[in-house]
Amino acid sequence: RIDFMLVDIDSISLVGSVYLTLTSLGLEIGKYISNEAYLSAGIAKRSFQSFRAYLNNYFPESTKIISKTRKDNLANIALNSSIGFTSSGDLPGDFLLMEANL
Image 1: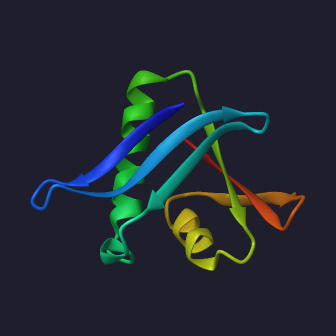
Image 2 (image 1 turned 30 degrees about the horizontal axis):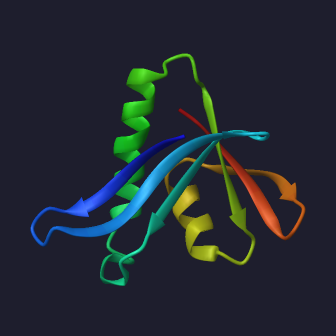
Image 3 (image 1 turned 90 degrees about the vertical axis):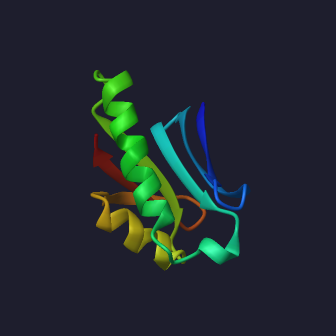
């Protein structure tokens, strides 16, 4: 698992994280904004774009990443769509599988 912690350097406060882990489904991305003051500020999108560039540099052989998202998490589904993920099917437990090319 690779974790990048997101920190506001001006206030020295934790904002959230973006991570990649190898699961039975493949290379799965996760993003979490833990500080409510930063929700809807574009942090998750910008951090993922930087993380994607990192992955392309250090794991050039990887071509696809996935995101497992609750079907009722419309904000995350919209975010994933805006950064290149497309729906690739339903998963048990009301989850949606989305995938994107690196």
